[in-house]
Length: 291
Ligand SMILES: Nc1ncnc2c1ncn2[C@@H]1O[C@H](COP(=O)(O)OP(=O)(O)OP(=O)(O)O)[C@@H](O)[C@H]1O
Ligand SMILES: [Mg+2]
Image (tube, rainbow, N blue to C red; front, side, top):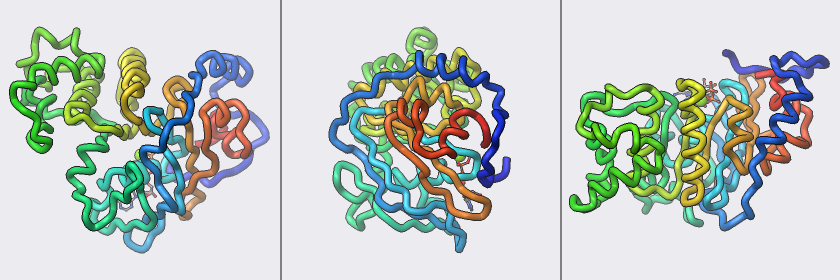
């Protein structure tokens, strides 16, 4: 899909039956948690690939132990933005960045900060599950631990705890030494979530983690996200509006006009963004009228 230039429409083009959908969405709203301290925050983040600016002045604060959904049409810069939050962005050739990303109040781009350490604290789960297929299930969960220096005698506990948190333990506890490649797509996605959790991150970034999954696996991941958010801060990119409503406390809506950088049109509690958005473009997008 190309970057959609926003065009106001007068008719509903979505597959949704608007009124019944609103009722469904209202029933699904999660109560926003009271706002705790800000764990992660981007201040005026702009991004370029070569000479092309793709993101403009993004300011979002992520309160501790909450879920924030990033929504917006294809190409508006959601994946690019989420990669700036744990310094994966700088690994892309030609990528540049302006602005700051504060983690626990300190800029992760300061010269004295080790990016490897940042990526342990701020983990990432990608769109397509990416376990090591020939490595065992257990081996996959533990594969990030070398970097974090966790002791060996803690390994069995970590495998059980993280697979339980990721909602996979009961399905794999009797075959921890089987190859990860034998798992279904949904199970593999939960396995990589367990792998990300094994290094005990404080923040988990998830870039469309359910887009390759069936509805049952999707619901399991969503349950996992809600459960995990009791202890960690989660940022999730999704094209699925119902998913944003089901899992997130806060939502930020990104948009880019053709050949223009993306930016945040509107952000706030998910109930407000979906229930009473301030911007017509947000209203149109969340009702499936474009993008
Ligand atoms: N490695 C790259 N080199 C050059 N341009 C890039 C690169 N990655 C992304 N872009 C450009 O940056 C813009 C934002 O892309 P990005 O992947 O962040 O969008 P997105 O919102 O995640 O889209 P989608 O919903 O389709 O995943 C696009 O115009 C894209 O072409
Ligand atoms: Mg993307």
